[in-house]
Image (cartoon, rainbow, N blue to C red):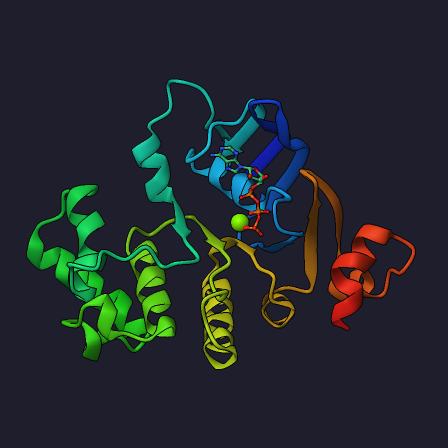
Length: 242
Ligand SMILES: Nc1ncnc2c1ncn2[C@@H]1O[C@H](COP(=O)(O)OP(=O)(O)OP(=O)(O)O)[C@@H](O)[C@H]1O
Ligand SMILES: [Mg+2]
């Protein structure tokens, strides 16, 4: 089943064309890795998918319904399409448990006891229950990212968007997050993960979408991309990293 269908998506900021002619389909359970140089439009593309950025033109269907346009319940959409940011975006004045329950209580209107139960269930998956009363400043980067992912999953989203989830982490913690993403994949969650990390990319998917100046230039196996020396853009991005 197609979960997300993007057609001829374009975004301009003023005169600057940031995305153009984006066509992409995600089936239920797909994991897509999105790579491309800085400024190529990766975050903008993810942000269009839950309306953090308004596209200039084109169409995005989520579960066969158009999500662009004025008559869409954006709050509802954001419950179904979760977002994990590079810098975790946890509330520093709230504990781990409160960070995870906040959206459940505010967006879903769930009572405290039930929200706590749900949050602890998610935190348990990531071995974070012992840290439930800590504040974000008392956690390592990897632990913060696990809380951020637990928080997104507490809403039971159909799709999870991850924007460079490991860029603030050391290699060991990055591997941790890679394994976690694989576990979510196993559970059937549809994901798009933006990353510069070739290790993470190869851990979670054997194919990579390569975005170049706002255009999807390739949807290819990582080893094929990395060995394509005839395309200067691909060579510039992957060549030096072999
Ligand atoms: N809100 C905004 N207003 C104006 N320009 C923007 C805005 N957001 C992004 N841009 C521009 O759009 C282009 C693409 O930005 P985007 O953040 O999508 O790139 P990216 O591929 O995620 O880069 P990075 O790898 O550095 O995160 C950049 O030139 C950026 O300056
Ligand atoms: Mg970005």
